[in-house]
Image 1 (cartoon, rainbow, N blue to C red):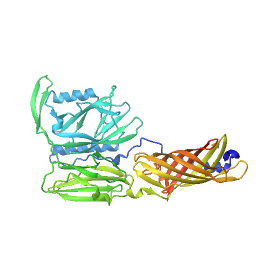
Image 2 (cartoon, rainbow, N blue to C red):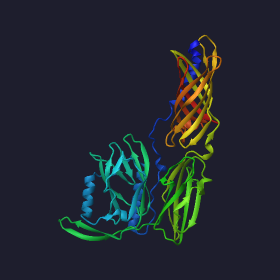
Image 3 (tube, rainbow, N blue to C red):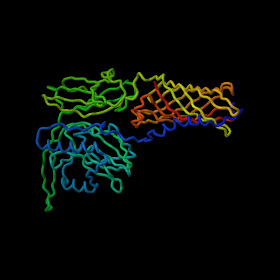
Image 4 (cartoon, rainbow, N blue to C red):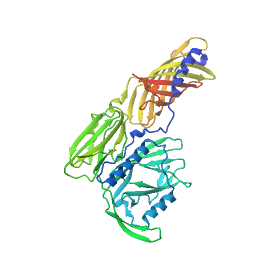
Length: 480
């Protein structure tokens, strides 16, 4: 055993041992990764009929485009008291329509309640603006240090973390992108769904004039609900944006609003990250409420980001659909990776003695489920003896690996054994590893260009000898 001849320090082995550390230092350690805003679902407003609506839509288009693409730009933000005062001046004690009778606003991917909470009154009433359009009043509390971009309005808390803002409504159903930004400038995207059921004909108003008199008026709504269809990928009963290999019970659900039954053509299109068509399906009449994933499964197998949308052509006029997105993480054919290897530095400590060397290992991996894999570790290294010479050490382990599609970090743990050939026999081991993997790249271009690199791994192994041997390793994983 090592105890029989304490290993000594070897300068060349130590140099080899620290090489992987130089690579690991450059790993991206951000857990809360900033999302690419260009991949977020865009809220598009199709062309309308009247000039007033057209002007309003162009203004909304510009605001939405700026808001989605430039999170950090300051937008006009009014404190809750100002919003309430200006709304009261416009509407007085006028008629408030129950929003639920005309539209639905639900979260596809809800913002955590630890960051954003809406009041019961938030979005419950429908109001008419001075241009004949409609809006909701959103109110609630937001966590200190956070800002939320809800569609084209920014939610920012006052001294008591309260907010109250007006959300101008588009004239079509579809997705509303929501971006949460913390005080460090890091952002994450979420999504709400606006579904128009019908449009009110008019709203009764009581306008308070400057002289103090109150005039009762009834004003019409200068909005028309354009035909629209919005697609959302569901796994069972839950919307999904990450496909992790298993395609069972996946389907595109299509929400259509104000689509006539005649003279209608529809088309659902799936694009890859290079804007190439990855899948497409066409039909006539009102789009179906559901399209099974198997329609596209044979065409979409390459990992990466995808966008999809439903376009309508009504009486020859095109109404483009909102873009949605998903990401394919683990394709089915990659369940078993046989040509996976690691090159690691290993330092062994026992009773104050140290020996460092390099290890080459074969690490076949089988994915049991989306987040859990079984990893084999069969490694070979050589340690020096204090009295001169060296001995061969072989390591064989079965490790369980846990990783999530959203993160580049992963963990491994499991039992095994080591055999020191001709120098102590075989001993049981326990190992725990922590690492950083390639997940749509490493986050650094010079590493992304090294296609064979797969992951960086740091680990600890306890060898159950007498006395106990502690081993620390740093390594680079690669696939062929």
